[in-house]
Structure formats: structure tokens, C-alpha cells
Length: 97
Image (tube, helix red, strand yellow):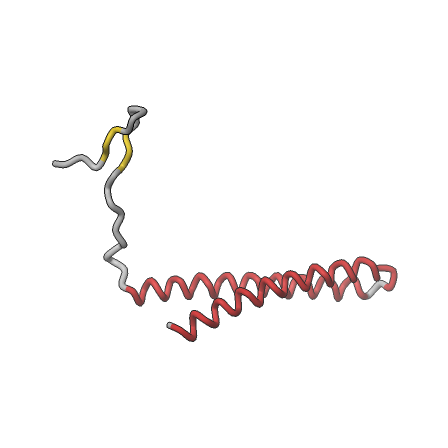
């Protein structure tokens, strides 16, 4: 039986076996798993948007929080940008599957 290891110059063994794609999964399964991951990521980011919006609404109830609301709104813009990127990636995967 041939060994999958060879000894390098430092005397350490190194795996030299060629990695192959898992043959038990078909391409449709791989695409489905990728789509599921994108969908979960999009959903988590959508939750972040909702949480930030609710936080801003709560701060808006007190007029003395105007500076805090402005800062939170800037943070919300970044969170929405992240969500938009995830949404586009998910939508493109849906469209081109």
C-alpha cells in the first residue's frame, strides 16, 4: 500500500494526497447548499436592520437623544449597505441557478 505522506527537508511528514471533490454530493445539492447559506446570511442581516431601526425609534421618543439618533442613523446606513450586498448576492444566485 502506497503512503500518502512524504518527509520534507525538516524531517516532518506532509500529506501529499490529492484532494478530490466529494462525489456523494451532486451539483444540484452543492448549489442548493450554497443558496441556503446565502439565504441564512441575508436573513441574519435583515434582522440586524430591523434591530437597528427599532433602536432608533426608541431613542427618538426622547428629544434629548438627537445626537445619539444621528449617530445610530449613520450606523444604520452601514448595516443597510451590508444587507443590500447580501440581498444582491442571494438574488443573483437565484437568478443564475
